[in-house]
Image (cartoon, rainbow, N blue to C red; front, side, top):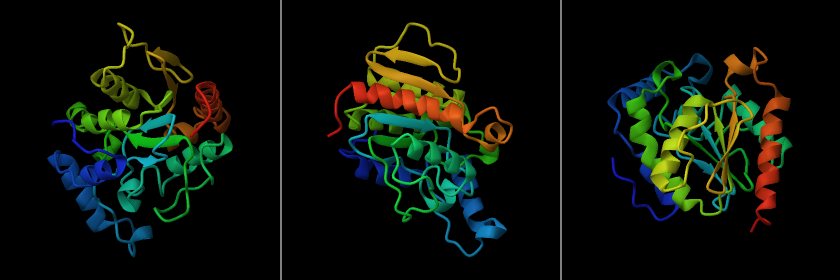
Length: 236
C-alpha cells in the first residue's frame, strides 16, 4: 500500500476511515457493528477504521495497538468508550496533555494539548490480535502522521506490538535509528535522532487489573515525556 498523499491530518483521517485493505479486519469490524454488544444495542457503531486524534501541533505522539471492538470501533475515536481509554486519558489529564480525564464519545468535549494519539492498526482485530501483515498494511498511515506532525519531540509506545510498528514507521520516515532495536520495556527510552521513544505497558485490563501497570507507572512515563517536550521549546 503506498503512503497516502494527504496534505493534512484531516484529509488523512478521511483516507484512514475509508480503508478496506485487510479482508479479515473489514469482516470483523463490520460484524461487530451489526451484532453489537447488548449494553450498546441502541447505538450506531462506527464500524470503520479509526483515525488518529489530537493536537495537530503536538510534540508528543502516543501509539497504541488497535481500536477495541466495542470501544473505538463503536465510538469512532481511538481509546474512546473502553476501560483502556479511561486509564490512558486519566493519565494524560493528570500530566497536562488532556483537558479532561474521560473519553466516552467523539462529542464529549475532550481536547488534547501538545499530544496526538494513534494506533499501529486502525481496525478492531479479532481477539485484539492483528497479524504482522495487517500491521504492515497500516504502517503507511503512521508514517504519514509522523510526516504531518512536524513538531514531534517524543513518542510513547504502548506495548511491544506498538513499539515494533512505530520503529518500522520511524525507519520508513527516515529517522536515524540505532543499528539494533533495543528490547521493549516499560520505562525504556531510546534516542532516535533527537526524537525520544519511550515505552509503557499497554493500559489493557489484563495489565491494569493485575497491577502490572498502575496509574503511577503510566504517569511517570508521561511526566518524562512532558519534560522532554518542554525542554524542546514552548508550545505554539
